[in-house]
Amino acid sequence: MARQETDERLGDEFIDDTQDCAEREQAHRERGTVRPITVVGHPLLHRECRDVTEFDESLASLVDDMFASQRAAEGVGLAANQIGVDLKVFVYDCMDDDGVRHVGVVCNPVLEELPAEARVLDDNNEGCLSVPTAYAELARPDTAVVRGQDASGRPIRVRGTGYFARCLQHETDHLYGRLYIDRLSKRDRKAALKMMAEGTPRYETLPND
Ligand SMILES: [Zn+2]
Image (cartoon, rainbow, N blue to C red):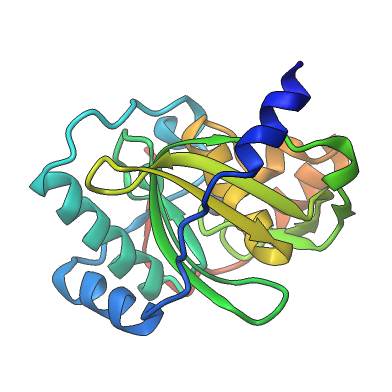
């Protein structure tokens, strides 16, 4: 039953997040302020964020700050709790495996369950601005569909393949309090944390008390 519902939804329209990427990203980040990035151990990174219910100017200005912070840290995706804000919002500026750039915002994201035949695992490296200087191999489905709302509250669906699919899953995970290292084996998680301890981030982070 669930699978049939999914198939019907897959027939719906996806947003086109590939137009005017450079202009849109630049406009956001020029209005925004760069904020320091929270790191593993910050309480907001380890619990589910609050739903967005007000699609107002303060949300728009948060989105601007997120684009500014994402660019400063050279990220391809950023969740609100990574700049210390307890709201289900993420932004992205990410290439898919065809070299097509995607720029957008998703509020209240939910990953759609894809039919098993549509799922091919891809075990590329993954990293996270909140686990600076570390990376690890992590298998994830190479296609993802996220349902949610844009910054004005309009319902949207975003589809990603390859690296962009990984990004959509990674950012949605963040807003439910899950880091990619939480999906690793104990040993790989430990290795990632060791890499983080030994490295120096190239962007400003918020120290944990
Ligand atoms: Zn991350």
